[in-house]
Length: 85
Image (cartoon, rainbow, N blue to C red; front, side, top):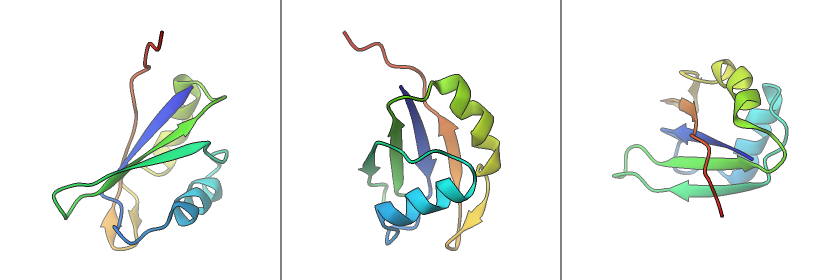
């Protein structure tokens, strides 16, 4: 399971718009999304891929990191693996 942090996402962006954006750049559709409110200026989203490992996401991450989208420069990072027991 891999998680991708999308920082500085325009607050009005829908989950479907995020999914379409990522798919346009070769990402598979994500399985879930969690919104992370910022201080009002820098909201984020964490998208989770149940069947994609973090090392695979790292190959896709440079495609969208620092991209200017919807009047914001995105900060995209692969999150560290979680050890869920």
